[in-house]
Image 1 (cartoon, one colour):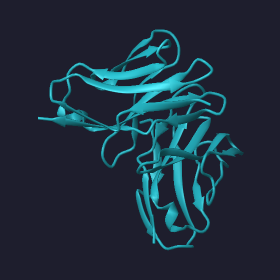
Image 2: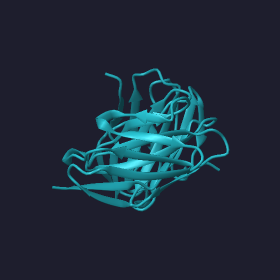
Image 3: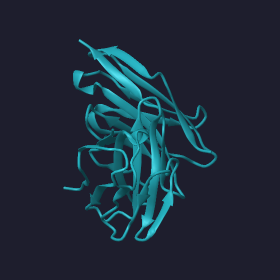
Image 4: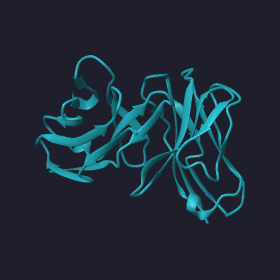
Length: 111
Length: 113
């Protein structure tokens, strides 16, 4: 089954403790992207990648890092999480000119 | 800059009634437009998309949308609402060079029995 897999689905952590949210796709898509969803603010792009070793900032990249060492994986790294990064995060992948396929989401709470 | 505006953050219809969710876009180039649905505690699922060709696009679950260039609109419709249609719906435009989706604020659809 074609899908984007994110882990974990739920995560509660403390301020400053580094964490990684994993994302993997099995569709051989070139493009991958991370979004965060917040009430009243909608979905905003954090980072995106056009292919292996090619990444760029989206609209809200501060406090986040990404890497694309393999085509299928695009982890999101929070080096020092803060409470304002409490949000619902989505990973997504696509081919050029097509819509994105989204993962099921990761609900992160930073206390 | 490309953007979308969804009119109405909350729409409520009766079961069996017409569903109409409004989306207007702004784009200096021919747009690629999408509708996504998000059920509670789930990710976003693609309902339908318009890229080129036929302006009336049919999607899953009986939904369709019509691209109207003159009105810069891409409204989503369904002739007869079902209880299972209750969800949040997002219109989006694709910035093709960056392969970036820009979303509207979303419309929460409630179905009354």
